[in-house]
Image 1: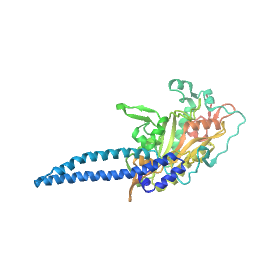
Image 2: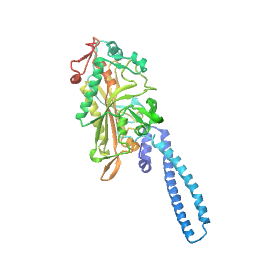
Image 3: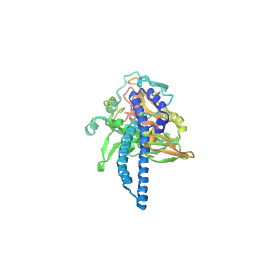
Length: 429
């Protein structure tokens, strides 16, 4: 969330940001937030004065007693104060709850380079890479082809777990593991530390990472012991961000570059839907994630580095792609700027999102209370995240871009060190 100091000192900057996002409702919230923040601080001062008066009267009563004087007037004043203090505290609590509601939902301040637009149709292409393959035969649906080759089982998975799940079999499972190891090795050479995070988070840290009330519809909730709420992670970004909740990182340790490897769980309801017998949008998938805690002065340079890392991975896999700058009407509340890398899917003749790369500036750090220490004191860090590789989407792209006329699929050469003797899907099935 935004630092309340920014809203107090620069409300017009926040207003302009909401106007860029075309969010009229939250512009109204901003006006009420500013008014309630003033009222909150006034009430805090009033409550402090009431407590001070109570202490003064208590001393006054003791002094009057020592002097043998009448204390009835002072006692009457003292009796009225607890009720006044309680009323002020209740009003403070109510206002604070409303302020927190607003702060958790008012979006991050956008970077000046974010293009203005009403929806995803106005996202701006930045660059593209790779030669789109040409085929002299009709491409088969990736899910149907893999099923025909005996490399995936959708039917039995739907029986035991429901639609949107699958069994990967044989060489395809090995390719999926090879993709993970390839991406991990690539990032380790870039100075990232591999993290295998918890696959469940409590409500408090999850609310620190994202707007859980909006995100909750696509997440799986698990009932823990003692009625504790736990959520299966939608991405390793979330537990990695929460790892330093309420902590201070030494400035000398920044940037802290972490590489998450984990399964991810999403209901994927609403407009997203599910690809029938496909690997592209499913309830469970594996992903390698880049995450960085850094000094604010370095974050925009690092944002470019993260998308460049993802591009290098797709270039090594020989998968054509384009990078788009997400516009004001399509960007979520957490990011100050976001790139998507969209991989070419030749069967649909369309680019499809495969990587999301965001600079969240201090937005997550304020919610999670993560700071760095320097000579100037303690300040909030910047957090950044980017997909390196989501295996299901990459597997679909590989099947479509490297499909052969005989129904087999060539495996990218860069994966050869992880797949001794396996060069083609379908040869030995």
